[in-house]
Image (cartoon, rainbow, N blue to C red; front, side):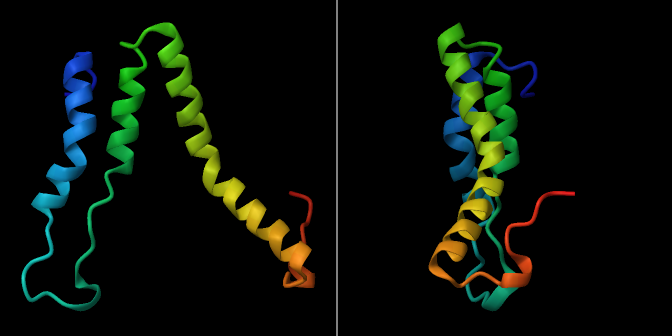
Length: 102
């Protein structure tokens, strides 16, 4: 559906899908503990955004592509920055200090 969708359909999916998924997977009344997890629509939203690239004007597509590329790098950047913070404040494990990648 995503591959053949037009821009309006992709926009509607991007806007409405998280709410729809949350409503479909709402925590059943009385359920306690770790038995229930909310759905994570990140992968499908990423696929929708990638499909939107083909329909957007060049500048908007370039901006969206840059954001998607940065989103892919974010987890690694967060961990790197956290490690640097630990180094600076002296709480880093000296045996696990920044080591060159193999």
